[in-house]
Amino acid sequence: MNPSNSTRAVRKAVIPAAGLGTRFLPATKAMPKEMLPVVDRPAIQYVVQEAVDAGLQDVLMITGRSKRALEDHFDRVPALEHQLEESGKTALLREVEHASELGEIHYLRQADPKGLGHAVLRAKIHVGDEPFAVLLGDDLIDARDDLLTQMIEVQERTGGSVVALMEVDPEQISSYGCADVTVVEGDEYVRINGLVEKPAPEEAPSNLAIIGRYVLHPDVFEVLENTAPGRGGEIQLTDALQTLAGREGEGGGVYGVVFKGRRYDTGDKLSYLKANIILASEREDLGPELQEWLKDYTRSLPVSDEAALQTV
Image (tube, rainbow, N blue to C red; front, side, top):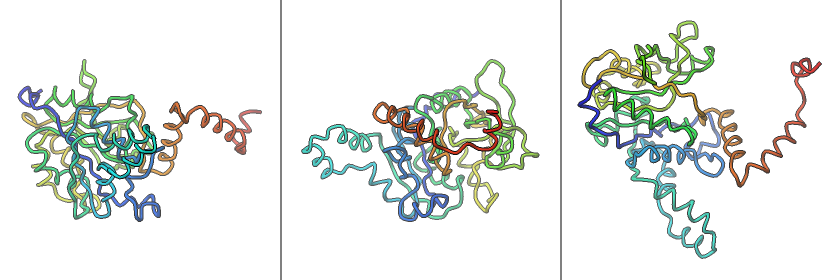
């Protein structure tokens, strides 16, 4: 524990959004992947909303070339607002205004794509000497699960850094950073002993994968500045966290919150489609009709040989 650090509240969120979105080409050739719609809002708005709901009104987006649409989305459009008001479309007007009133959103470019660690390092001047949250735009956490709030509480209690962990199929662990952990008796978090970036299943220390939420001590900046490029020639945030995990005292220690709630990976095509279907089917305006259609549609699908055998 580090009581001196607990007095510095987490106030700022950093959202890396400089990726090219190649997995969604050609859709992302001229549009940022973060602007792909999840039902009727761009994916990035869900992430910003999550930060604001956790009390983080100061949001810094790390962007790149061809990302101007992100700034435009969270800006006001007086002509559009006036047209909606004149047309009596008050519900749509409220939705449009809400996006531009979410919080204080700032933008900073990552000119060279040198990895997540480099993107986080770009936030050093804006963040300063205080703990901060990092939210990856590909991960959507259901609004009914307050993961980020829990992580902030753990950071304030421990004074270190905190990552979100989630159990995955051991065969899928090679797609994630993986954590070696020790249970902290009497607490709802774990102590992280070590981290491995995308290990082979047979070499993974656990099936606990790092997902895209972090609450970091500002000492991470000094570590990132001295972290050599790792896998893929990029500066890996995982490598910096590995260093912090071995430290004691001010800023030392890395802890994990094991998330058991609802998460949608919008960086993967299938998960992106699932997120749209799940979130739309749970809405009052779309859900009832969509659910009926889904039932009819699934009944019309051909039955697999395996399923047919199970019914015999």
